[in-house]
Image 1 (tube, rainbow over the protein chains, first blue to last red):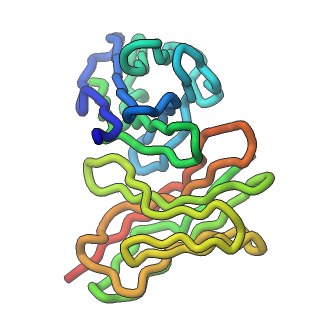
Image 2: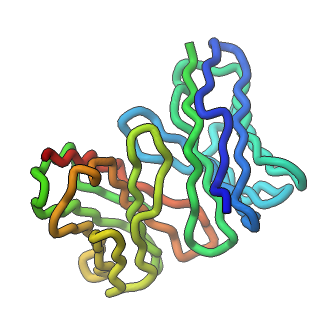
Length: 112
Length: 113
């Protein structure tokens, strides 16, 4: 019973490039959440999605960031024109709709 | 809004010592409360949870009791091991329609042999 999968685990981008982070939820889970962890800080909520719908994006920066969870395939967090301040660990979690969220191993983004 | 305040670290203990990591929260309604653990370079693992007042969550020798009167959910373990060295996060999930977890800032625990 595979857990939440995220790839890549590590991603290096130069300023101005695009970053695409992928998340495959646990089997049977239709709810996906993205969180960001800046160095030495706790996790901050970014966005909550269900299949083909964004439910809550109150934690997403207004510019350059977008997320989707298509009918088929993984959820994608996209960061356009990355800046050094985007360097962080990005975690995806999934749930079947109950209170408990299961986390993936994270993608560590480094912007040079 | 919701918030979680955790005891600041780092915390360094000797093996077999008693552990307490304090956590208090602010939330409307009746949130669910969680402790997550993060080992170096890994994601978060759920350690324990409690969904209503006076519930006690427990796992792997760790326990925490949901205290509504003091809005607290302190993590305790009677005898820590070197393998417990990690970062511990307290978190809450609102009882409303919002599904986002609100995390504390984390407490780094190091256990020395």
